[in-house]
Length: 619
Image 1: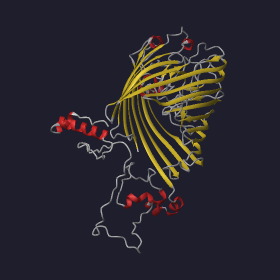
Image 2 (image 1 turned 120 degrees about the horizontal axis):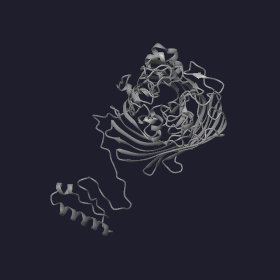
Image 3 (image 1 turned 45 degrees about the vertical axis):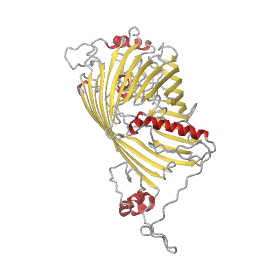
Image 4 (image 1 turned 180 degrees about the vertical axis):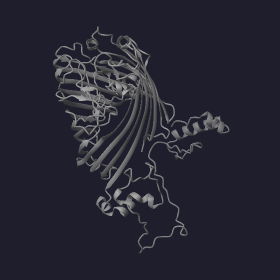
């Protein structure tokens, strides 16, 4: 038996510390060798712990003290026990006198699905028939989100060809400062049947409208609207429907509530952990469920993409859906290939049949087909085969995705011929936590096209990406849509997108598989200064995979591959240490490399930057 260690703290608290430690060692040695001697407890006077010699022991016996008949009267043998009536099992706390205000989402709240709506007193008083029909099995969950965004940026901006904001201006590039103020309110309403504490709901009906107002100012004409007479300020608003679905629980397949369910309607869907391929709120039908105590999860779905509002990005259900279908089959396996890591296999088929139609956005710009090449419409079919993983291996966190895109473009507008699609994508983030600091390393590869005019399209593109990667909103390259000035009505990168894909817009345009591709290497850190404050920093080096297509579009020699360095920093403040109120602020700058200077250096008015402040309040 090991003798208890002596510490400096004990020595200062006890007189004769040295004698006590020697005495403890002697007692331990005596107990170890005196096999036939009894085993009296030796009490550690500081920690109140009674060490014993290993071996069989007798359970401690506890005899409760006798009841005081003056305080606890004995129950009568022939009388039933007295009980306290309560309305139902959900309102026991209220029967004991606890009351919570309606605006407290953490106390018992009938608006947040904590209490059945059919047994609520005011519902029974004013709507007795409805209360009887709902009973004690239906719950209501209401939510509201206020999203306020203030953003300032400088982007490469062309001078309008018809008229200039400044008489005598004959430069290709104009003044690029822009600012945006956007306010979005999202309201969610769900009606749920079933006690969801331990099992999925039997039925769920959900509707989520969203309302947006925005104001944007720029320094050049024809940036906000196709008509240069419209000016350099735009005020706009839109009401969209982000979710509207019915979820039906089909069956339970195990005692631990593995299940099958189907969801029909406008619903959110993300194809992988980081939103690299497809993250949208389309209309669709999705069959999903779990197996093997939730170790397996699966999705089988068909989705029809909806039109988007040009300035808010919200769904526009007032127009016909797009002729753009997405078929998805994926499966997740937890704790594979080792505990703590989840693997996902994905097959996605995107069938786009919008080649026979044109679309002008609400600002008057042509977005389908894109103004590139001969600007003729085209259809395409592409299948994505992918693997994604997310979790930890020991103390190292790993998130990764790999995709292969295989398909056919019926007539690429740049090549002006059919093309076979053969493209690839890979991304990974490795991180490690050191107490209150997380250090991250990021790497991403998007294949590019070496010959825009051959029969192969080898530039990877997604369906609708929204990557949470390499800084996401804090990054200039990911946050901003960088236009390809002088190369048609397309952008080098879309807003809230990492890919260099030469699309008209990410939300309304078609995928394009003749593009320069991208190579990104970066590092970052998340520092939790306090439970309320997190500081975020990112540094990324960007370069094109191949610039042949950029040379063709600009009618010049292919520029150098280097885009430059994306440097960003941000801070997140959660005053209540929850997600109810979150303030994000960030600043980013793109330090141009040789390739970007060759594309944009003439007439530039300063560095390209992005500043934003975002306040999100949630109930």
